[in-house]
Length: 301
Image: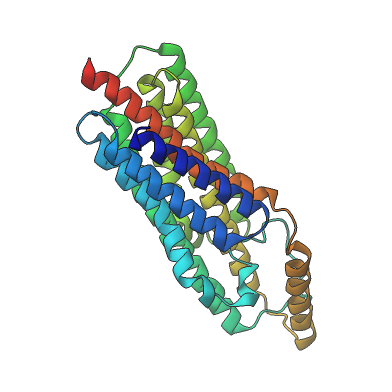
């Protein structure tokens, strides 16, 4: 069996294990399997057959940048305060609704730690931005095919994706300062805009199995979800940090609420995390396999 096929099988198996462990709420193991899947996929890219110039290094760099946040996450994972984890996008952003004013109190030190985690998520979004840029280079280099229907469909999907992301970002503003939100989420928003452009371009550069546009769409969804999580976390932090009605009793409510959520989710199936892990790993993998196939066809033609 060829080494490239073995590496592709290893990447697929490690990715599947990452999804399964994410389903069981084993975040650390899920990230470790995700890194193994990305490493095997990079090996597949480097050992694959003939390809057009810039396609192979662009794909390898894009996969590595998408895996970089997981590496950082594993590095500082043990250092994260237990009471803050519930508020971070990696685990579960608050998202749906806040407790009434006067029932919640968060100490200033916890708010500072929360803001630090938001800054770390912004760095993660910046890594995704660079990763999307590398993948965009690989897609642009692919030969253009005359496929009007596929091109129009890809353009429509890209516009719909941007409309959904824009609507979600607008819904986060409410009475929060728009410039503050933009400052917090600009890397994720820019990555989403670039990923939507890759989706639009992929329609005319699709391989025979249409893996390039499908992978580009999953990459765009991953980045869009990251942008929405970051916006949600920033808006929730801003809301709590601007509340003036704090009391010791309400602080007890927060602590008990966080403990209740943590205990109720521990050991239960986390379908949302499993789906997100599957989409995040499948996007670059499908785009990579499709781009190498299209590049190989053009290189040998």
